[in-house]
Image (cartoon, rainbow, N blue to C red):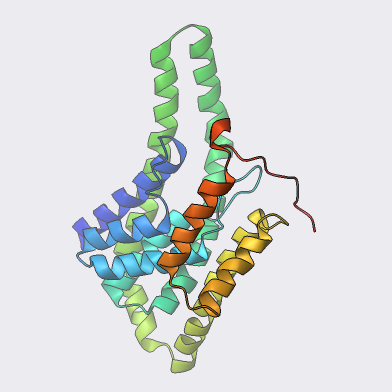
Length: 253
């Protein structure tokens, strides 16, 4: 149990570093986290299924401008670990992951607000002196502190909370677990609604309805829709302009 908790903490800590300080390889997305937690705890299939389900919930949780999204990576890591270790129902896992993600996001922002100015100012002073080593120290100090924060949060929640969660779940009445299943069915719709809120405009609307018609009325498989989508992209993007497409300011109907 101790080794598993340490692995969960390391994976959760790495996700934050990858998301904010490195090249952002997208291993912090729920789908990848579910796989990694499953690999660490010996149940890759369950981990991947849980991660894929939570990816639908947090698919629109993307940091843009001043918007601070829920901490989907920590929520996924803890929920997936609980599912594998405690046998938690997937519906309950989806319900558990959401508040963890929201609360963790708030704590993460507090750390940013309190520590980031101090470390950033140190880096600026070292840069003014031409001290390249000082710049690296500034960058990786913040990364290390955030890793430690995330590691201990994930470690403690899994090591001290997994058995407690198992006991609570075993005592829950059937109507509560049924409610979890109903809510879990609605959460992916919320995730897609968040995503559509960012990309939905007059230019993308026809493609949305095209995909719906192809799958619902013509019975085309998702692989077929994907292939058609690639063809549409190849035909509509001006590749002579560096692969950029002029997007109209059609955010309103």
